[in-house]
Image (cartoon, rainbow, N blue to C red; front, side, top):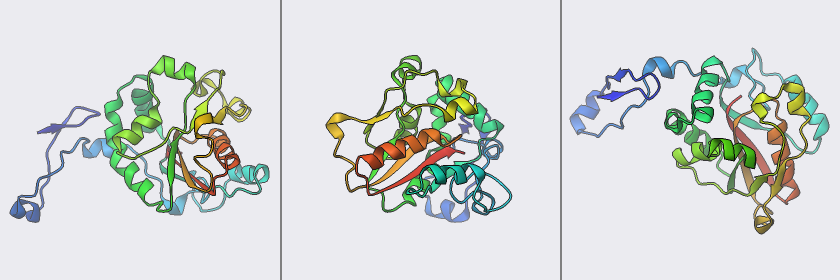
Length: 231
């Protein structure tokens, strides 16, 4: 009998009649129904069509209208899986800051399916973390998510930021960060003419992801899409 990876409660597997008759091997469940329901999947009919911010309508949100003015030649089309509710914040704390990378398995299948819906992508690029964050944490959380979801990626970008961690910043400080990303010199031509998808863990203001978009477009990418686990 399996136990929920989050709450450690025993999980009783529900088998269909067809599965019993065909002796089909069941994939082990790693999350119980109660914990599964704590995530808040974003409904396409109740979010901003540009950034998937949760709201009661499908109008473009004020944040996206401001970004359109700043980037008039780039049409933001961001995909996100879950609203960043209280459970999402607890999950991220346990995964990213406590270092319990096992919980990435809870979202791996859904993340993989979401990425596969974007069929024209040539290269997937995770948002890089700064050297200081890597020294403190020991891993890049977005790379861990992609590895566990068995999604191939290329670490084309590097983060040269020396600023304090994003989680410690307020909204104004996040919006005022300077461009931290660069394409690695040995990979400078790797995005030229390619359809690129940039992946991050959380989309908050959009500043980080749009800096990454700006960097990749300057490297000659033909098309850039973005996706995050939480919005």
